[in-house]
Image 1: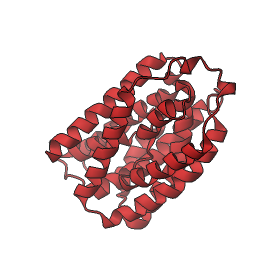
Image 2: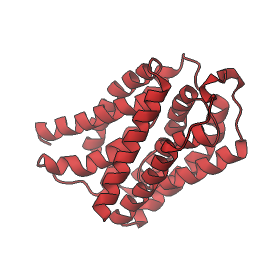
Image 3: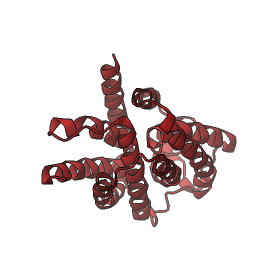
Length: 259
């Protein structure tokens, strides 16, 4: 690989992972389109949708480890929520990741576009009033809904090599009514668990390119903790707005290419 290729992949990984730590997602919502569209613009050979999903899956695994580690002492992770949703999502993500080998590249991009659109719509819906005023030690949630949504998100996100946080976050905020800071921290832990299934499925399917994945991993381990720590110091409305803008922009780009 050339120096330009290495630098391009590193910057994609760094920028995407910093934002992923900041808003509590694995980062595939950002890095999937960046890996798909940026390399050809700088003279690199374009990655296929299968290769992009494979690289994304491995990178998300390491980015979420780094993000969760950075937040482990801040007492904002709801471990009961992580347990219920994490168990369901790892099953779904493995099924989706391995099953994705039987889909065409266009089908994978279509699944990504649908997920991004659903997440974008959910992020612009009115927020639950007073949600962030609930003491974190008094937060409750519907266990059945948590499991059902996590399983469904796991299958769909596993197909595109994502951990699913970009759609889990609005579900946790709007459906399960989890406060923003707890949502961001807990979603990182859930997406780490999800990424185990996604990574295993993509490796078994032969969709992971070694060196591009290694470069993205290095960038992720550096950048994700920086974003995660900064997230505890930023206004929650700003974090929600940033996440909504990222998801909406990506959804528009995907559908523009299809149409």
